[in-house]
Length: 269
Image 1 (cartoon, rainbow, N blue to C red):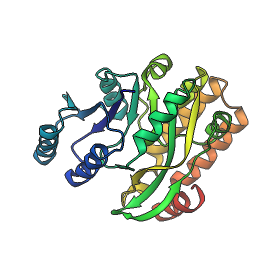
Image 2: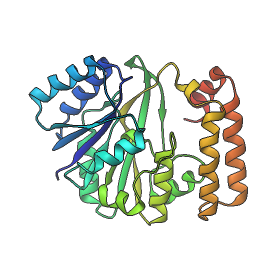
Image 3: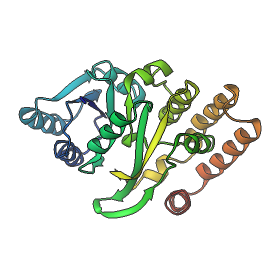
Image 4: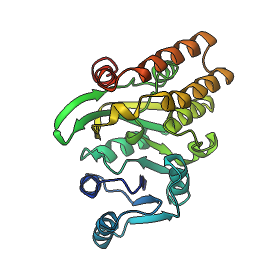
């Protein structure tokens, strides 16, 4: 089964991290048919040099240049226009695939045609994959994923492989910065798309030093609150669940960063 890999990248990415990402993709037990790298605005010279080096040896690596940075949702939508295959694996430019990630997901989708998206657990690491901080585990079957999604994001975005037609039917990504994936999953569920999470980690997720800081403050909360309200208006969650979600999230966002980091790594994993 042919499939595409879709990766957005912007100028702040570290070329060393991009190399680790590429090495993990090109070292898979089941190679990707094509890799679509979306350059979300101009990049640095070092990033361009790294990309050119890999393209020289891997013609399946294709780049899409966007004139300015428009955010991950916009970049992914543009990238999907250039994916040649219905099966698309998501990845971020600073994460690392485990060697059998694509094989495990393609084989699952091949043998379970009713499913529209498959994700997995993710090992969160700092600096090196030998330094695993936590594993983000998520429910396995569709019904458990639906119940979990009423409280929290039910999929690890960089681990997912989905059918392009299912994402298209749900309306693609919408410009809701930092929560565009959660928004898409709920819209796909409401379109009766079938979800599954493989119950092991297939990806190393890079946990940067400012991870907790970037997920705090009023700016983050003001994006989450309208999302929860939209879930309520769609009839996906009750008024009481909406109120609980908003209250809990807002409290966590307003905590000092070091406390928020502890909550993420110890209580939410």
